[in-house]
Length: 231
Image (cartoon, rainbow, N blue to C red; front, side, top):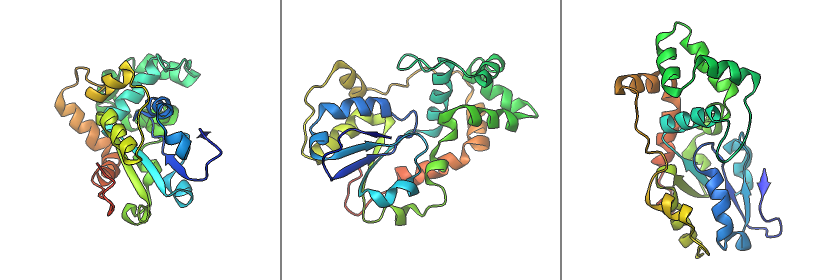
């Protein structure tokens, strides 16, 4: 858990769902006046919504298309966290990436193998981004009830800069310095690599392994709070 400002009682909680732009958000928030007005709390991976909801009224939830998020999580560990981090593989990851040297090989293999379920379970076990998905954070909750009487802000990774800009304006803040990195994200998605998997395999992978992730993703992305805080 990272607390950016411990002195001010009013708090904003950011649920850190992996591969949705959390690292960028953590850097950009300091370029605004928000930390001077609120205690900004960025949750660690694994902090479930029900564990923190009773403590905070203002909650920011970042989301990203589940397939895109899982693919990014795979490739992030394939690069051992680079360029943002340098986290060497565990022994389990060494064996895993020897068997699945790319995301395309991974998807194709587990769809063909009789032990495909086992391959995906291994992936979820060793990959923090696969382990902590929307189902983990929001399962067993009536989200409409859970979001009641709270200011919920949804940030989409696909429009990260734009949604962040709107949050800043909502709190009557300004961004002190818009770096080239901010402007790049503001005007484009950072995940525009050409998809090499056939669409049929992508659909099959989504249906077989990501159906629950999409269920929660759709609930959150379609949420319309009474106070119109959704952009």
